[in-house]
Length: 156
Image 1 (cartoon, helix red, strand yellow):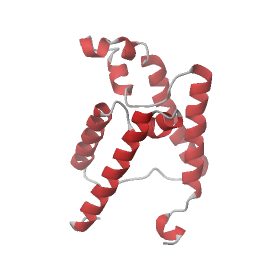
Image 2 (image 1 turned 180 degrees about the vertical axis):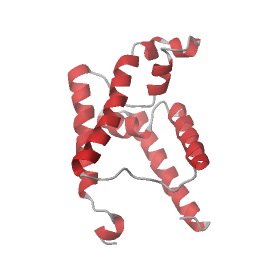
Image 3 (image 1 turned 60 degrees about the vertical axis):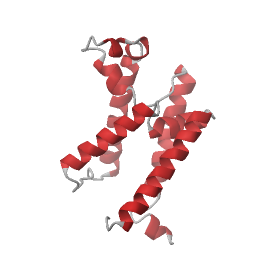
Image 4 (image 1 turned 90 degrees about the vertical axis):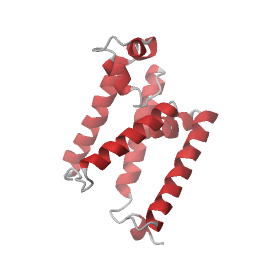
């Protein structure tokens, strides 16, 4: 396969994005000792408004301020790149109900695996954490099998 088939929109923005993500999580870790991931964002943010015992755990309450700033930075960074590069915001044709189901499955998987794909894949693997390496292998295997199954069943 040629690079044009694998990357029909080009590859440079993927490289730039990967480098920026790596620099961002590295800067967070080096300057604060915090491991950047987003899977606990909703739980830590909800701890401000909900008094549910689960949400009042020290791990959520103590992390809520920096996780909120981290999430805002992710959105602001994507917006800044879009504006600076003059690219329009991507639009999807996937129905809202399918996006909701996919979000639920991804959120459930992140909770089940004690972290999201980016947290395990970027931070956990960089720290050589065996559970993260295993989680990423499971994520990738599941994604490849699912893609092949969907294609075999006539999907996109």
